[in-house]
Image 1 (cartoon, rainbow, N blue to C red):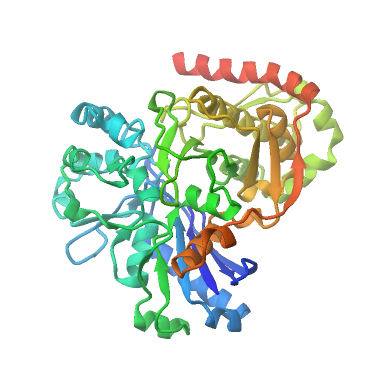
Image 2: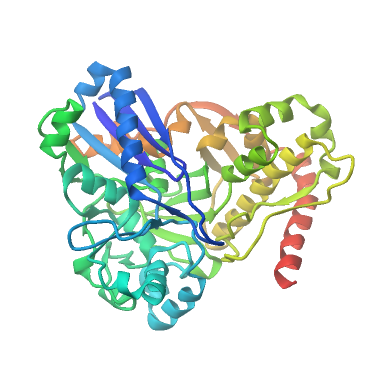
Length: 486
């Protein structure tokens, strides 16, 4: 039995996987994000541990026999976050998260200080990455920066609680801007540009290799055996790829989570930072991937539902019932989904969201439709950037919370002009991939465990709908350009 732990932004999710690769059960604990100032996004790591413990209790109670048989743990986590520890491993400040935009000025400073940044890290300096965050801390919290003994990524701080070891993996470390992505090792040159060194970094192991074992006292408290292996694990998107079986060059998926991601596997390091395309290590040795990222995807729908005093499920059901909303697409508002700035392709931390074209005839369902459409348009911009970088995609697997909406899946297929495949269990996302990585670290072969789940539904693009939506997409893009130049 294998356990996957996925540390997301809005939830810690646990998943039990049996030796045959079947999901036995899941449990989760919700998390909240603190935004104490404009552009800031933080969480306290102690909340991650409390959430993990609560989910463990829930899963152990629901599946006691399967739980007791766990022999390996894999991990997945939100990328780019900065957990700063002193020399006694005490937390120095709340973790600065992936969607934090405060370090925009430091991005230019890093690019100037490290002229080979793009060639080594394969990515533009963006506020979401870890390195600019540390430059911000050095500038604005110098006394605290002087006490930094270790910089850990979010899932790796959880690993420290599990094993007592400070370890990361290349897929997650690639999102720091401190990794030589082609060599899959820390870059002393990029670390020095931020006033850091290897001694403050974690040891690196591949995602499918053991990183340590569960601490004996924790294993006893959790009712597990004495030698539970903890795998290297992966960043959330690479783990989701393992969960969906995207392991070979050309395989890809689209994640509708808090952020929106299009991920395509490569057999080589293929950077294209000019288009704000990410080039990272995959969660298997000898594999890399290209990725486009929009910062607000399913989180846009969550924001809209809260604004409407409702919830996502209710709004999606209302939209599915309201045929007039479908027929009134030509008059629906245009929604810009830039609630937290944007990465691909704009690299604009100051981008803002908006509804354009509201009238007295606008219904709630029209706005819900506009949110789904705006996110799909943002994903299309990301896919265009990937295509410009040489990536060819004809089908994408759909994962994440947004995959539960057939209306959204069809809309994305129509706008992106690719087949969208929904797989059985696809909502498990990173937690399933994490559990699979645990199984690989315990000795299971990739070909047996990392298969593609069965296709539950396939959404193919409709040429007529695409032609209609293309006209609205022109308005969507023009609206962003006008706002940016204003």
